[in-house]
Amino acid sequence: MQRQDPAAEKLVPANAEHRYKVTHSDLPLSCPMPGMYLWNSHPRVYLPIEDEGGTAVCPYCAAQYVLTD
Image 1 (cartoon, rainbow, N blue to C red):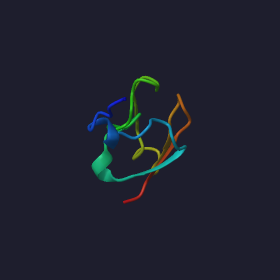
Image 2: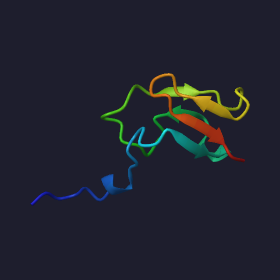
Image 3: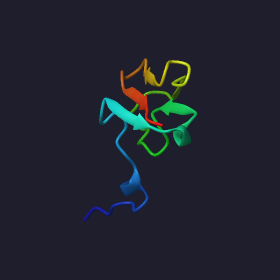
Image 4: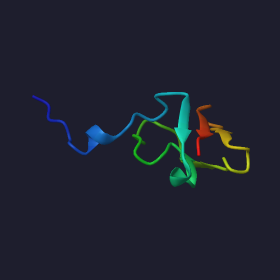
């Protein structure tokens, strides 16, 4: 029987979606974001979403981020 790590249950699979809504509380924005699994993702990259008019695209995985507030 395999046991689940309770802390791992709260993690979101990295790059599971291609569009993410973020708020100012998520800044500075990085991909993958904190709270995502990192072992199967790419190196962390910081995205200048405020300088890009409220949207940003990750150069590694093409995930799209939209600033909602």
